[in-house]
Image (cartoon, rainbow, N blue to C red; front, side):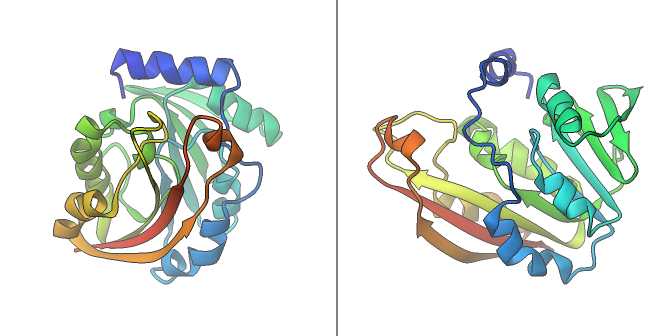
Length: 220
C-alpha cells in the first residue's frame, strides 16, 4: 500500500510478532463456505494481503493456481519456511515473485496490481485484507479487486464491526452499509453469516463487542 507509514507499521508488526490475526489452521469460514467458490470451478484463486496464511496451502490443494499478494517480506519468507518449501524467486517489477508449482506470492504493494499483471481470477478469498485497509483507501481497494476478477467471479469476504470509540484498527471496523457501498454496484452481494466473535486479544484493547460477518459477492 505504499503509503510509507502503512508499510512501516506492518513491517513493525511482523518483526515484533504482533500478528494475532494469524491462525495456524485453515480459516473456519473458508471451510464452511468454500463450496460457494467451488461452484464456479475456479482454476485461479486470489488472496490479497495474504500474510503467511495456511489458507494458501489449503486452497492450492483444490485449485490449480493460487496467488497471494503481501507487502512484508518477512511474512513471505516465514510462509515458505514454515511450509518447508523452497520457492523460486524472480524479479517481476513492481513485484518480487516467490513461487512453487501452482502457488505464488507477489511481494509488493497491492495497489501496484494493474490489469494484466496477472491473469484474472474466478475466485477471491479476502480473510483479513479489507479490514487492514484504512477507510480512505477502501474504494480504490475495491476497484482494484474488481479488475482482478472475471465476470461471474466470486469473492468470499470476511469483515468485522465494532465500537470505533473503543479501539483504533487494524483490524478496522467495516460495517455492512460500507460493504454494500463498495461492492453492490458491481455485482450481487449476499450476507452469509454474522456472529459475535470478540477475542481476548481485542477485549484487552478495550472492545466490549465485535461482530464478524461473511459476505459472498459475484461480479457482474
